[in-house]
Length: 498
Image (cartoon, rainbow, N blue to C red; front, side, top):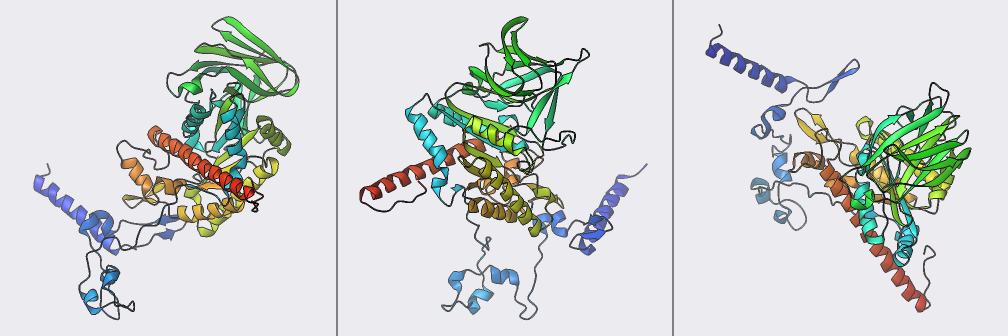
C-alpha cells in the first residue's frame, strides 16, 4: 500500500518535471511531419506568479521600464529624461485601446435610399408592404438576431408573421414547431451539396424541399405545424401563407385541422407562388401531392401589409453560394418579393481555417464578388454586410481570440464599402479582441462554451443593437434629406445620389 508521503512526493516530482519541460521546451510551436507541436510556457502554468523581464543588450535598461514611462516625464524635445528612466511610473496599460467602431459604416448614407424611403412610405400608408431578407450562417438559426430586428420594425411600421422559411428547416423558427414530417427531403446549395442537382435552381433561400416518391408512384409530403408559446406575438399572429413551388405536374396542397379538411389549392405545372388561407388555430397540418416530382422552395407566414423580415440561416456556409445559384431564378425571386434591404452576415466559418493575412484578404475579395452578384441581379435594394464576431481558441491553457480576425474584418470592410454597401463590424460591437471570452464568462452568459456561437441572450442583444443602429442610420438619412431640401430652396446644387 502506498503511504501518503510517497504519494505526495510523486505529485511534487511530477509537477517539477512539467515545470522543467515548460522551461526548456521551444517557445514557439514546431512542426513534426504533418503535426504542429507546442508545450505550456511557464506563464501558462504559473500565471501572474511568473514574471519574465527582457533587458536591452546595449544599455542594460529594462525594456519593460522604458515602455512604462509616462510621456509627461519626457523632455520637451520628446526624449526621455534621466529621472524618467530610473523612476518609471507604475502604468499598467502601455498602449491605449483601439477605438471601436460600433455603428453601421457607409461611404454615403444615400446608398440606403431604397430601404429608408420604403419605410417613409409605409409610415404614411399602412396598406403598403416592405420586405427585408437576412442571410447568414448558423449564428442565425432558429430566427436568432433576425427576430429582434423584425419585431422592432413591425412594432413601428406594422405587419405580422415571421416571413419565409424552408418547408423542412434544419432548425425551426422560434414561433412555429415542425413535426411528423413525411415524404420530404431537404437539399441545399451550401454545406454538403447533392451533386445530382445540376441546374442550381435552389431558389432565393438557397435550398429546396423535394417530394419523395411513395410505393404507389405518387409524390407526396406531409408536415404538422404548431404555434409555440414563446417568441414574439406579432411573429406568431400571421394571417396568410404564401407557398413557392416548382412542380413537373399539377400539385394539390391541402390544409387539415385535426382530421377535417380546411382548404385546398391546386398549383399548375411549373414554378408558381400562390397565397393560401391558413386556419386561425394553434395546430394544423399541410399535405402536398403530385403525380410527378416537385420542389418546394419555401413558404412565407405573413400578413397582407406591413413589414416582413425573412431569416435565412445556412449552417456551415461561408457566404460563397450566391454566384453558384441559377441567375435567372434568383433574380426573379428577388424581384418578386421586392426586397428593399438585403443583409448578409458571413465570415465566421472561415476564421478557423485562415492560414495567413494573404488568405484572409483573398476570402474578403471572394466575398466582394458575392456582393457584386447580388447588386447585379437586384440593384434596387440597399445592401448591409455584417462582419464576423470575435471567436476564441485554446492557446496553452487560456482562450484567446483568433489572431487573423482583425485582418479579415479590415479587408471585408474595404471590399464592402468600395461597393457602396454598409458594413456593421460585429467584432467591434462585441468589444473587440478578447470579447468572446468575456461573453462566455459573464453572468448571464452571452455566448456558449464553444467560443463561437451566442446564447439566446447574446443573440437577442445583437438583434436589438442591429435594430438600433439601423434607426440611427435612418436619422442620418432624414437629416441629409432636410439639408438637401434647404439647399435646393436656396438654389444650391444637391447630390445626385438622392
